[in-house]
Image 1 (cartoon, helix red, strand yellow):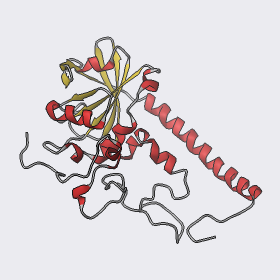
Image 2 (cartoon, rainbow, N blue to C red):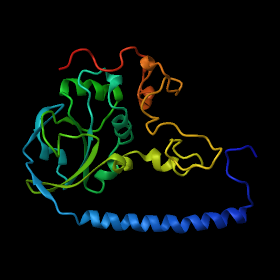
Image 3 (cartoon, rainbow, N blue to C red):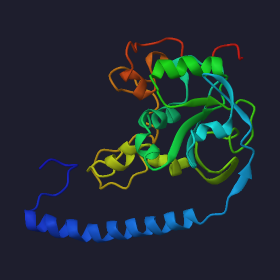
Image 4 (cartoon, rainbow, N blue to C red):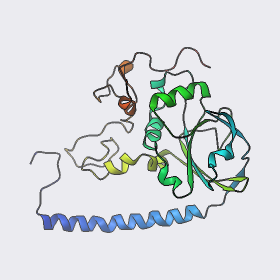
Length: 251
């Protein structure tokens, strides 16, 4: 057996090792359930549901995003003013890409939307470029918890015409949006990120943000002039580009 792979054993030995790990996995699951129970017991803060956000039909009150449901989960997507379509935030692109469909949230009474600080006239072409079908809204000029720092999952509860903030998370707290991380964690080589604990001689990981930019072959070249955020190569008509980064002017 070549280096950099798990040891080979018989099935019974594998089953014993698997059972030992399963005990830890079950404990991890139960602790996650306990944390979720505590999360449900957090207090909440009332916000103004009449504040206007801008979508395809122009300005609408924020409460409209609930679509008549009692709960609303939003992802707050970063934005670079004046950047070309392929130059927008790679990490947020990954999260939004994996939440193209919210039907199973809606089935439990939870609406979903993406909030973005970009001006609507820039955001709308980006949505079209990426092929997104989720509801997107510009929160340009608004403060927390609608605008402000982006890259967050934020949750709201509606009681009639009153709106409340119940939960917010960022950093690795947004990983539930990114299903591929948990699935990669099930594979021998994991996420192939440099911070991971791997045995000596195993493939060494790259930077954590390997999904940020690649060329059309999936490589992350020194020359970034022909790169896209990785998911954008799946878009129809995606081709190498030479206009990355911000434009000289800003809107």
